[in-house]
Length: 352
Image (cartoon, rainbow, N blue to C red):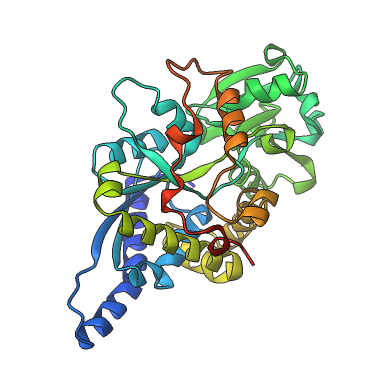
């Protein structure tokens, strides 16, 4: 989806209205019952334009979960995870949905604010290589000697050295071509490159929309080849976390409820998301949400331990994998990046 100023404004207004609708009705009922307590105003930043990936937040709004926690949530769109992290660090936003591996690198900078993740939405990062089978690529080892299109700012390529090493592939054997994100799918569709890096739920589905047959696409998810990385996670401003911990816990509870709703009622979730997009496609977002739930949210780890948390040992391994392409000034620990103090008990996070 091409991002324009108009679409960004529409994303902001649409989601803000959606999140506030149920709150208004609940607030009205509360006032009539004699409750005068004002909701806490919350600013949420998304690191990219709205699509099916933010269904849990949309459903938390329209389902009344934010309102039930006494929160009035509005939303803005950042220009990527780094920008979103910066807004939370500066106090311009209370929460943001960002790539947790970008947070790990950002925290290593001198003077970085002690921003932490408090809820992991994507238990598996969506990093992937998307290739054409007709170009001779069916498995990860087949990328050797091929042309790989890498978009500016792509996050997947940062974990490629670790994935390649684990699978006995020499990264230098793959010819990397720097391209604009706007032409990533068109170039692969036209056969100008053999494969591209990207998010499995974005590029692969966008390519099918461009007419590339599904059976000609090989979606090589890094998580299937030894990548330990977690993905999209919720971060919080440290001042808010210290001053209003109950509000932070309430926000997390609402997101968990919204995630349950998106899983239980995907058709409704897609309807709500598409209504907030500029020229969104119900068919594409339905396919996108199915992929996100199956590949990134409802993993074996989540089914066993519940939504939102991390496995500390795995997280430490993921930091080591990041270090294969990033030189830390001081290697962080899992505790430096993730704070589980705002999560409800595990039995309240289990997906039934």
